[in-house]
Image 1 (cartoon, rainbow, N blue to C red):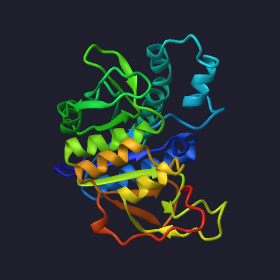
Image 2: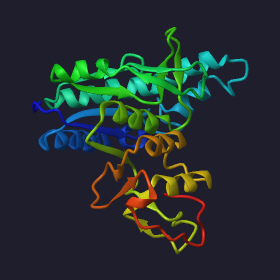
Image 3: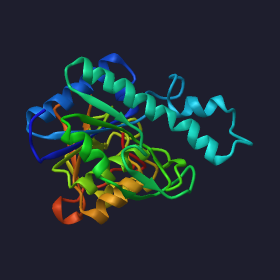
Image 4: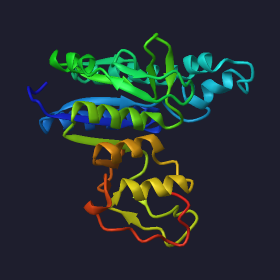
Amino acid sequence: MIQTEKISVLKFGGTSLSTEEGRSFAASHVRTSIIRGFNPVVVVSAMGRYGDPYSTDTLISLAGTGNGLHPRDMDLLISCGETISSVIFCSKLNALGLKAMPLTGGMAGIVTDSNFGNASIVEIRKDRIMGVIRQGIIPVVSGFQGSTENGEITTLGRGGSDTTAIAIASELRADHVCIYKDVDGVMTCDPKKSTDARFVDQISAARLLEMIDSGSRLMHRKALELAISRGIAFRIRNTFPSSRETIVYPTDGNTPAAAPCTDSSGIV
């Protein structure tokens, strides 16, 4: 790995990692980050969506409706998806000659409160991740999870891997932050519902937060709140080949306002 102080945080969503093809494209982004002179820190979601073996919803279905299952036990169950994902993606990176190490949230130094199912990050002990980087190894962190001071595994709520990535970027003072998903970036509304939908090259986190509150599931709400409070800009890109991306700025002053379309209920 290149000897550099520059850090990039790359987060990959579950659909990006659910197939060998997707993992190959994700690995190519990690390699590109190294070529550009960064030390990449990777954050991963559970692989796939409902029906895929290790998706969060599939794991939840194993416990039926979850009735009678203690929230602590549910978190222990659903945290497995991201842990599996980190190990599988590390295997891919290592096979390509990119030395990588899987880390659970707790192993990465992510300390949370004990609000099972919707925990908040209390602190990130960055020496855990930096120690891996200093060995010339790529940390691959299981998103969506952390552990309490007592060692209890907790999860951050649906979409919490986004928050993991932004929190790590803040703690490590990352020079580049990219959230990879299975879409090109942000649109003013769902193109399946409105012909007025426009692609947005730049947007403020506050405006994107309004869209999330209107029903979009593109980003985790806590991630956007953290980006605003910590002043973190980041990019949303497609893991699969695309020439487009959306830059999300922490404040409205960085970017022109995006005029809403007829249906402003969400983003694809």
